Amino acid sequence: MMTGKEYIESIRRMDMNIWMFGEKIKTAADDPILRPSLNSVRATYDLAEQPEHEELMTATSNLTGKKINRFCHIHQSADDLVKKVKMQRLCGQKTASCFQRCVGMDACNALYSTTYETDQKHGTTYHQRFLEFMKKVQDEDLVVDGAMTDPKGDRGLNPGGQADKDLYLRVVERRPDGIVVRGAKAHQTGATNSHEILVMPTVAMKPEDKDYAVSFSVPIDTKGIIMIVGRQSCDTRKLEGSSLDVGNCEFGGMEALVIFEDVFVPNERVFMDGETDFSGMLVERFSGYHRQSYGGCKVGVGDVLIGAAALAADYNGAAKASHIKDKLIEMTHLNETLYACSIACSSEGTKTASGNYLIDLLLANVSKQNVTRFPYEIARLAEDIAGGLMVTAPAEKDLRHPEIGPYVEKYFKGVAGVSTETRLKIMRLIENITLGTAAVGYRTESMHGAGSPQAQRIMISRQSNIENKKALAKVIARIED
Image (cartoon, rainbow, N blue to C red; front, side):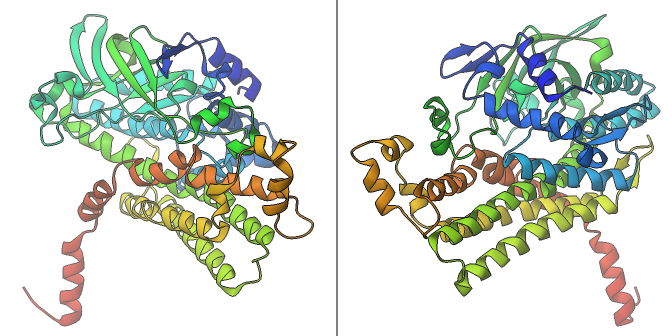
C-alpha cells in the first residue's frame, strides 16, 4: 500500500490536462485551490497506516491474498459492507469533507458482478479483463474515479435522439485493438486527484443506443482527456493565505467536467461494449452501492458539524438553554438515523453470482432518500445555533489590523476564557461545511450525488414489492381471490 506522501508524489508525476479559471493547471498537488481536495484523498492513505484504524481501513484481497486498502477491496461478506460504512464515517470525521475515493470503490464492486453475469450470457471475456484491472488497482493502491453521469442535454430525449450525439459518452470507432470514445462525464468528484477513470453508462440503454452502453477504464492523464474544474463557494479564499477565513484549512473537495476527445481504449480495458441488456444492471448496482456510501461519509461530516454547533453554543454562552440542547439532540437523531439505515442495508447484503456482496437495494435507496433531506435540516439547525456571526464575521486581516483589530476583538467577544479568534474559527468551520467549499460535499452531494431524489423514489417503487404486501393484507383480512 502507498503512504500519503507517496500518493501525493504519484499524482505530481502524472501529466493531467486540468483547466481552472481559464488557465491550465500543472498539477493538483501544487495548486492552492486544489491541494485541500488532494489532502482529503491523502487521508485515506494516512489512516490506513495507523494501527488503530487497520481493521476498518484495510482488507485482504480475494484476488491476491495481500493486505490492501479497503477502498480497493471487492466486498466478500456483509461484514465487509458494514466495515465500508464505518470506514467512510471515520474518513468524514477526520476530514470534514468529501474524501472522493468512494465512487471508484462502488464502481469497481458493481462492475465485478455485472461483468461476470454479462460473460455468462454472452460468452464475452469482460470479467477476466476486469480482474486484471483490479489486481493493478490493488497492487498499486490506486485512486479510481468512478464516472457515470453524462451531461444528458435534453432530458426528454434518449441518448441517440440528442441533436448533439456527444452529450452522452459513446463509442465512435471500433478497431481490432480497441475502441475510440467521445463525450463527457459531469460532476466528477476527485477527478484531478485520481490515477484512473472508470467509465459506466449513465442510464439503462435500449438496443438502438448500443454505442452508448460502454464501460472502460484508462489512466486519467490519457491523451484526449480534458478536465475543467467547477467553481465552489468561497473557493478563492484559499488564495488569500488565511486559514481562519477558509474554515477548514487542510481538507476540501472538488468537482470537474471530464471531456473525452476521441480517447483510445485498448481492448483489455473495455468492460462493456454494446451489451445494452446489462447497462441497467450496472447502473442499478453502482447506484445502490453509492447510495449506501452516503450513510457513512455524510454522517462523519455531520459528526463534525454537530460538534462545531455545540462549541458555538459554548462560546456564545447559550449551551445551557433548553432549546439549544434540544436542537443538538435533533441533529444527533437525524445523523444517527442516516447511519442506521446504511448499516441496515449493509447487514442485509447478499452474495452475487460472481461471489462479491451486494447491499439490500431497497434499504440503500431508502438510506439515500433520507440523505437528500436530513443533512439540510442538520445544517439549518447548526446555522440557527451559530447565529448571525457565522456570515457577518470580518476577515482575519481585520482581526490583525492595528487600527480596527481591537474593535473586532472587543465586539465579537463571547464567553470569558474563550478568545475572539477561537470563536471566529468555529464560526468559519460551520460556514465552510454549510455554505462554503465543503458544502458541495455535504449539502449539494447529499441532494444529487448517486442520483437525484426522484431516482431513489423510482427504485424504492421497484423494490417495494407491493403485490406481496397486498397478499399479506388479504391473508389477515381473510380475503380469497
